[in-house]
Image (cartoon, rainbow, N blue to C red; front, side, top):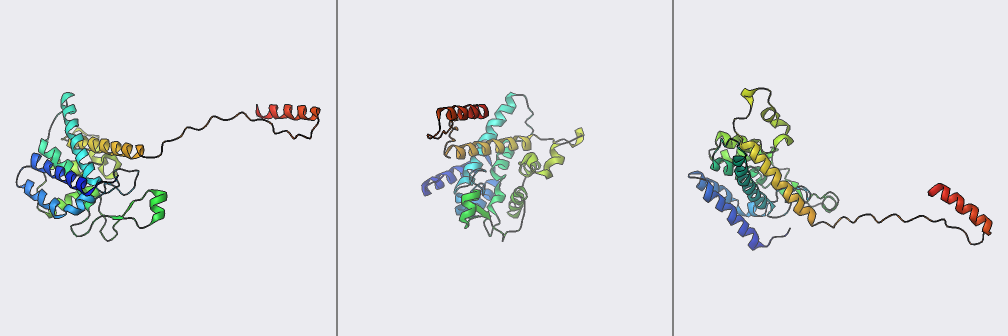
Length: 251
């Protein structure tokens, strides 16, 4: 996917409009300051490093986050229709969706995704980007929460769980939250479950969009009936004997 500079800017502007629409002060100003301080980086960030994951292209991050927000809001409507408890606010849902992958930005000082300078890895493994080894390791949800607290942005309990647990059971560390054998330890908010579903939906859609741009899979041609390759210098009797042997073996 190749976006023009104008398209990257337009997507970024729409992204910021979600903050204006759904987030209340003082967090509106705080979040916009964080994102505008790193506007260029946020605008051209990918959402993943490998092409067959999701949105591993310049501008892929903003595109992914906006899709997650839209999926989350649509899923909330479905959950209401089906009778699920809405035990979180719309601001909490959108705040968690906006910032769930913020950790992919890296640190305040250094970006996390760098263009891969290995042509072999790009061509053979689809690793379009590589991780910045200068940044200390931290899982994406943890870094997202760290960056928010670094800016003094208050995160509610529901938002904290939504961001921390958005990878669902893909993250082993989330098991105690999702797999409970006691009613007292079950999640008391549906926000993390809904946000995981929204993220999973968005990622799957983005994978399918990427796959559709691949060369179409060509069905295997029907197998041709094998025929005996009979030398022309044989007698008719020898040809008949060889044909009978071939037919016995291959038909």
